[in-house]
Length: 328
Image (cartoon, rainbow, N blue to C red; front, side, top):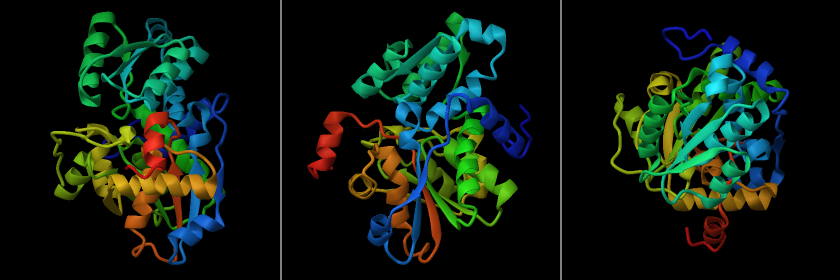
């Protein structure tokens, strides 16, 4: 894969990834809902990309197939290892099962039990250790060294970014008239994928990012202009719960994003409830963060055609019950 010095991936990388993943990952719907437009208001047209309807319930399955289909025969034989809060691991477990690649997934202690069960269901080996995602990354690195496994980082991997870019390829193919995108950021694969596509296909498209206020490392670093790892990542949106800044994505986001906001826990929970009410589909916290960010940017985006990505649906039952009860 060609990775130019000034940008992590190219549009050619994204298009090649799209061709590789298509036998396993079908295009997901891009829909509009009058009730959602009315709830957002200010004349904003909301275009919803339903990655919550993808295999494994998340866009991360694209990233996994993009990487695993490009492995060498020797890498496939040895297998891969990754750290995750769930969706990256689910994607890798799914792709590994389909392609015959052994997968080891490291998750922190107390991780979403339903995501854990899903990964095991695909046949992945699950290692539960570490207090959070960032410690699970360190454990995965040690396992990779000891067992000669290929690390597939959830963000610091060009193949992952190329897979994530296929979301934006589909969005602009279906709705080239969009003015803006508002995307949730954990590590930034989705945002950098979208920026890559926008640079090639529609440079005037504005891409905005949103992160949970309780896990603001990337947001705070973006505004500071330099990486500033955080001491903690405290949010029910576990897909956004990282204390670190990804080296492969940060500079591209710093130069390319039109803006970066945070959303409170109550804001993300409210967006999740609104998506359930208006689209009748389920989102996890990270999946609802794009809509929460759109509310934070409403005044700036008034009258525009805006795309959001419901990036995942894998919320556990106990957390969903708290959200629906208004406890978050």
